[in-house]
Length: 495
Ligand code: GLY
Ligand code: MN
Ligand code: MN
Image (tube, rainbow, N blue to C red; front, side, top):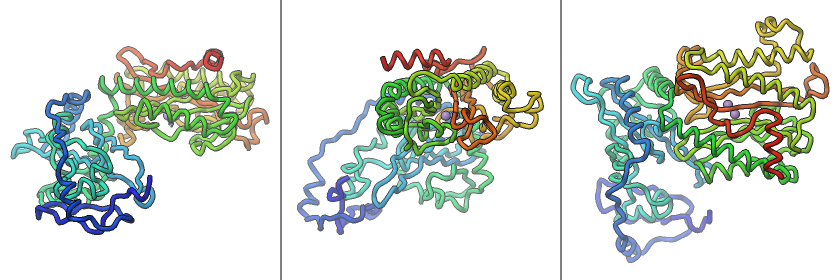
């Protein structure tokens, strides 16, 4: 960003209307004052670009159904769900904005500072809710906000007008700058989704309790467990883009060898930004012994022929649904004998795990199935003393299996994280749920309890599995998993 282009003036032209909000200016501008002539000049000569015949966003009917379910769960209660605000990265630059999951889920909107309010209808609280979305409107051109404010449209781009937002989202829209005062003036209890908008929370301090707000958060987490048709299509898109991103990486492994893991991260990121919104989480581009570090996101290490690359990455779609996929690839295209032995064990564990993803099964079943296979192999290899039942009972395999075998997936990579235990880890799988199945084996480079040749090898295989009426569907099946198929796929991409 060129600093000399920062919009700034020490003087703001007087606001023409007394009740208008003051313009929030950026700091450190280099320009002196603005002449009256320029101020007048900038007010006029702009075309009317208002759009009057917009089609609703594709998920509008789904977000309406989600709001109806929320309304039914909290009859007679005022509910406030903020999108969140920009966060400062340094001085006057901000991190790229990603709307709060709860807000995007209920509105289909993703703009910063937005707030969804559900106002109960009917005196007895039995009339459902009136939803209103509060947004920053188009910039005022009369008072100079348009070009003098850091949030002016001339600097940050055209916003939807409130009328356009109404057409697109199917929700009446109002000016969010009026919301804090409106909330402060209300009587009666409110529930708010915390952690996204400090200004909105400050306006509600005397009307909320932590316990009641937590109930709202938990509800919105559990409500997302079963995906609707729109969400399933988005997750499939995310997986398809992710598969293309993995292919991109395989094609440039030689360039990664000449540079570092960063080449892999950057290559996958390009696919994520072109086809989606972003990556759904920091890509884990772990070559060689880094594969044994579960959340290796520094990605600054060497990529060496003869070693494995554990790539755990997912594209987040433009509507904010993410894939979460891992493949462990031989950097030179061929697994060594020991790499293949370990890989095959993880593959068999994953097969057992995926087979256990069934409607009506307990959530824990797929984890138990995968862990059993891994424990059996560890006993066979002489790394653990049997019998397998004893190993499982004492959890001894966990020195090398390290993590749970999977989690819910959706708008958040670890979706539904606020759900109650009985609704999630102790719960039952239902059609429409989507989860990862991702067993792994990790032998740390400094683990003296395994033979030297095992040390520094880490393998994980992770796929995104949708529970269907009669079993499951692997949404990430476009990427091969079996060792020989992985090798053939890599050969086909690298010629
Ligand atoms: N990528 C994080 C996970 O697999 O859970
Ligand atoms: Mn993952
Ligand atoms: Mn995962």
